[in-house]
Structures are given as C-alpha cells and as structure tokens.
Image (cartoon, rainbow, N blue to C red):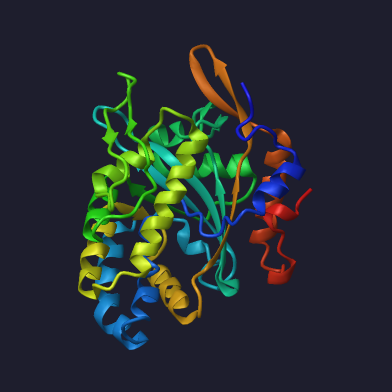
Length: 342
C-alpha cells in the first residue's frame, strides 16, 4: 500500500509544508477556541474589564466542572511560569455499544511568551506500543483501555517527549456548538454518503448555503474515501468554525456556547491556568500563530486489521522538532519550523 502522502522524504515534506497551513487546528481545539479564545472575541465588543466581570466567573464555574486531574499536576510548573508546555488534544468518538476511542489525536506544544503553538497530528491507526498493556496496537485503542492516562503515557513513549496536560472533547458536542452559532459554510459540491453497511449511515446534500450541526459532524466523520481526506475535511471544518466564532456578533450567546463546550470537555489543566491563557490571548494583538506537522507512514494489514506504520525517519524528525519547541532556552527566532528540517 502506498504512503499517505506518497513519500516521507524531507524534500517533499518541505515543499508540502510551504502551503499555507497556519491555523490547521484539530477537532479537539473547538473547545479551546471557545474557552481560551473567549477573551479574543470580547476584545471586539468590550474591554478586559468586561471579560473579567461578565465572563470570567461563568468560565471558571464551567472549567471547575471539566477539571479532571491525576494528582501530579501540582508539580508541573512549566505553564504557570510561562514556559513551553505540551497538551495532548483528543477528540472522543463515543458510539452506541462501543468503547470510546480517541478519533482525533493531536500533540501540541504551547509557547505562551512567543504566542506560538505547534500541532503534531498523530493518525489514529498508528501502530505502536500501548503503555500499560504490553501490546502493540492502534494508538487510539489506548483511550479505550486506559482513558486519558494510558493515552498520555503511550504518546509520551512514542514521541519521546513529555505530555504535561490533556484535553478531551466529545464529538457529540459539535452538533450543539454548530447549531448555536447558526451553522457553518462547507465546500460540499456533491453528495457525501456512507454506503458500506458496516459504517454509520449518513448522507449530506451538496451546495447548501449553511450546514447544521448534524451535517457538520457527518462531514468530519465520513470515512469511505481515505484517512488523508478525512483529516483534510476536519481542517476545513475547523477553519469554518473558527472564522464563524471569531466573527460572531451575538455576544449574548457566548455564555451558552461556553456551557455547551464545558459539558463536552475534560482536562487536567487547572481552571486558573486556562483563564490566564485566555487573558494572554486577549492582550496579544493577534491570535496565536499555529504551525502544523503530521506523522508520516504507510498502511499495512496484519491479519484482517489495517494499521498505519509510522516512518522511522519521520518519527525521529518529529521527536527532535518537539524537543526543540519544548526547550525554554531556545528563542523564538531560533525555533525549528516543520519545513526547516532536512
């Protein structure tokens, strides 16, 4: 089976990375856009005082309910000191009578002082050792067997870099979020439909001026072409949601959006830390600068199961990239960018 993309050479990666990939945010970042980005939304309508008096209390209550620590976070001071820290973002796809699996997995490095974020997409079918089970399997099975903790340990082992925090989002909340903002525009020019009887039934009509939450969720879950195109649809959807939220004029709806977000969001980041990041976003003249990389590899069938075998050279490259971004001694101008490594 061919590579997806077809080759993992540094030259091809360099050329592909030159494409405008800023703000390619994974599905899990919807919640952070709403919670951490609330300050940026309010900068257009009110002052920082308004954020602190009208919104901060509601966000704090929501985050308190979403807070699920493991107990060691008190020793982790990177984020509190403004140093680079890592956050594992997971979109959880809960289906009837099936254990939850992390359908979207993104390892992110946040550099608060530099207003920069690195996003590393990990294909959900990546074949790797599942820490705590002593088996090799698809990386998304870690969440099904051991929840957030096993996922964090597995990703840390794979990438050979620490995972400071996690944030999970239930995809079911996407429907309510999209409906609450009045739908989103999606570039659908032909019917999208699952025809495999083993897959969840879905059908989306093309050329609609606006798509509701159910159609939007179906758009990102459609799986009968390729994982590469599925990931591309997720990025298209996220751009559409991001643009709609940042241009959202109905400030009165913000508390409702925060409530929807919070009820589908779990994290071990302290609520006060998230609020601090929200104010940091507010005080910056521009939103954070995102850079993106996706682990490369090729499909392989073992028995009757399809896996994604990660390319060893690209995996080593990614480990070095992450280590560089996590190093607080490295200045912004000296950061390695995905297209820079050979």
